[in-house]
Image (cartoon, rainbow, N blue to C red; front, side, top):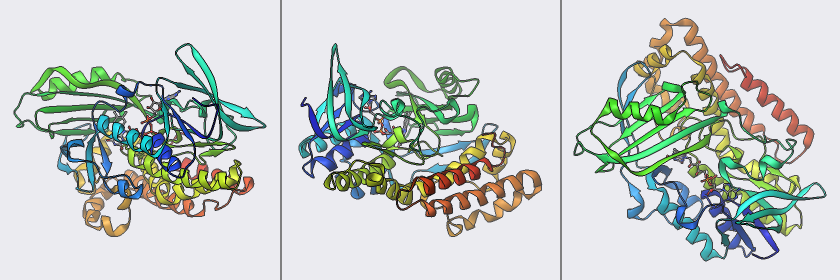
Length: 442
Ligand SMILES: Cc1cc2nc3c(=O)[nH]c(=O)nc-3n(C[C@H](O)[C@H](O)[C@H](O)COP(=O)(O)OP(=O)(O)OC[C@H]3O[C@@H](n4cnc5c(N)ncnc54)[C@H](O)[C@@H]3O)c2cc1C
């Protein structure tokens, strides 16, 4: 590894790879430090991704061998079957994460980025209050890679973020009620494709599914809020397997737990000499935990801001601010509305969750972030009105939907340029709106 780069990136996940590719093809020298081995990259299962994001970030669409079966779930509330189906639209594909990881690394390497596997980013190197590179470790060896700008794309580990002061609009670490524990196993399907696929929403403060949509396999996923008192995902998975049956004993893929951030994205993703991208910036969809598409989008915006900053020979917050502005406008203004709904749903009585799911006012749409307007939801109105019979609950629901709209509008006022006072006021207002979510205890 050289001593100095234009950009050093911690983490070779989706965010790190897209950022590395974008910057390397602009002829910047880029080093990507990745703690895992090359052959271990990518979750050993398949995940749902928006097809359009590949065009947005200029990466070839997934080849057929990367694509797995689309989900078609029968929905359950924690209390009973909701008798509705949730089917994945063609706007979204289930992609083999190992294949996607390999492809994104290849794209970044062929653009000229240097990858260093089995190399952990340990801490930011600080110089005059700014990040001036990354301290790394590989086996017994350690060293420093200096950079004009560094990026933390190390996912939930947040290798650099957690060593930064909390004065930049992001937190060092997340609390348990801001984190989902996910545990996934792929096993053999013993029903010959005749068994059902189910999705249970709201039980154990999370989601569990059994999918038989990829022929020959059963994909079992258990996601629970890390603060859930009953929280052992492996035990819950066993319970689900016993309940559904027709599932082989052997784990053929997966068998791994991982964490997902489930709070709204941070108010800012930049500090002097540093940007945060992807899960490290809490960028997944707050209602379903999907973070691949948003991470790729964010990396694309971050690369543009880094390019402008380096060209202007700057690394200060104001020089990198456009990244915040672009991501907040394109993605976060939608996700934050869903965050308001999520925060309320977690706190609401499960009886009412059951009522909503059976009322006709509810569906699962993989493209929900783009269907938040009244036009897209008009057909749910009759079902929604049925809920009037529970007036207190109905009022909480109305208030939540109203707040979700107001919070979304607040994002239109995100400071277009960096001014510490304006930013502080904007953050304080957001915090006060979030505190008004019904049943929110902070
Ligand atoms: C069970 C489960 C199911 C999911 N399902 C979906 C889904 O269907 N759709 C979807 O869009 N998203 C899904 N996600 C979320 C998705 O995986 C993440 O949002 C996405 O991978 C975030 O990308 P990232 O690059 O920010 O982080 P990651 O993909 O986590 O990459 C971070 C990289 O940094 C490396 N790293 C960590 N620490 C260090 C260090 N100190 N030094 C160097 N490298 C380091 C890690 O090894 C890793 O390779 C799921 C997540 C889980 C856990």
